[in-house]
Length: 139
Image 1 (cartoon, one colour):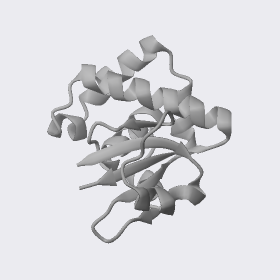
Image 2: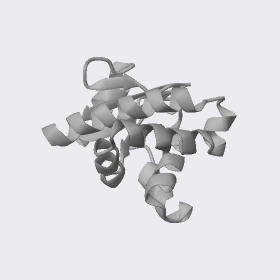
Image 3: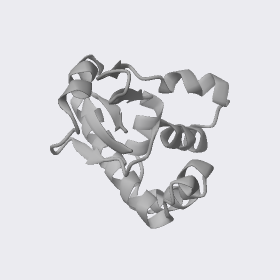
């Protein structure tokens, strides 16, 4: 699985799905994590019931039925991640790496911290430019 997080407008989702792996200063490698991993982060950080949060993680665009797919990360999670300090990233990464989805992918706390630090940076960019966070996934 390939994944990336990028700062963009939701109206750009179809173009992003068609363009290939997002690159540039407003995009980071998502560590191969899928939407379930980011859903687990959402539940860890913001709480809520799975059946209430799950619809927010439906793809908003796709290249084809086989992918890639683009998801808009909910704004509450974007705002929370944008506000994280370096020490908060490390603590959250430790907790997130213990979630089943990350354990299944073999993601340790150090790698989760790298992903979260990048995610937080792109979230700050998105906030300052009036954009959203988009998750790009491909098999």
